Structure formats: C-alpha cells, structure tokens
Length: 163
Image (cartoon, rainbow, N blue to C red; front, side, top):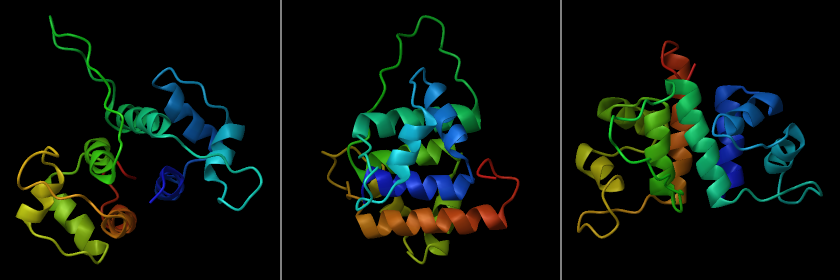
C-alpha cells in the first residue's frame, strides 16, 4: 500500500476536506496547502498526482494524533521526543492506534470488521521491534483490511475519536 492510498482512505474515514487535511499537517508546523493535498489524493494515473513521502506521512500521522487526542505535554526534564518516520505498515499502524486511541480489544474488533481475524498474539507481533523473534510484518492486504475495518468501527462506535 502506498502512502497516498492510506492518505485517501484516512480522508474518507475522517470525512475531512482538503483544507482540513492541510490543517492536520500544520498542527506539526508543516505547511501543506490544499492544492498539495489534492495532489496527494489524486490517483497515480492522473496528471496532478504527487507521491506522499514517508516523512510527510509521518508528519501527517503525528498531526492526526495531536488533532484527535490533543497536544501532549512534555515530561519535566525529559529530552525532546524524536519523531518516528513510518517506513512500513507496522509503523503506520502504531501511529493510527495512538491517534484513534484503540486498545487491544478495539484493535481486534477493527481487524474482525475488516474481515481479517487475528488473535492477541498475532496482533502484538505487529507492534514488536523488528529484531524481536516474534515480530511479524504487517502486509498490505492486512493493513487495507484494518483501514476498512476502521471505517466500520467508526459507524458502530460514534463516540470514538474516529467520529
């Protein structure tokens, strides 16, 4: 799955306009005008298409976390947090889990609603460090199903931040 595919699906899920999508970037101090958002949303075969880089996707997902959950106050005496650039589906899943405040049971339900049944151990394998023996890469089909399930979850749980 490309970053642009994920970006399109998140826009559909959130029902945001180009301006609102642009505002999510600006939460992190990154300027992306609505025309650039439209280029990210365009299909690959369209003339206006522009690929969304991993670093730009990371900025968007961090902005989404702040938009949906609020600004996180740094702990006293703690160093500034280094942003993780999501380089694979597992990293993107981690950020979406935070943004939408999904606990383990909700994550399992989202996957189930996306017609991808997994158990707790399989779910936790997606969140392991890459060098851990139980790490499991999240494939494109599983991630696509997760995003589809998130749309259904939103319909069934209107009080969730996804709404």
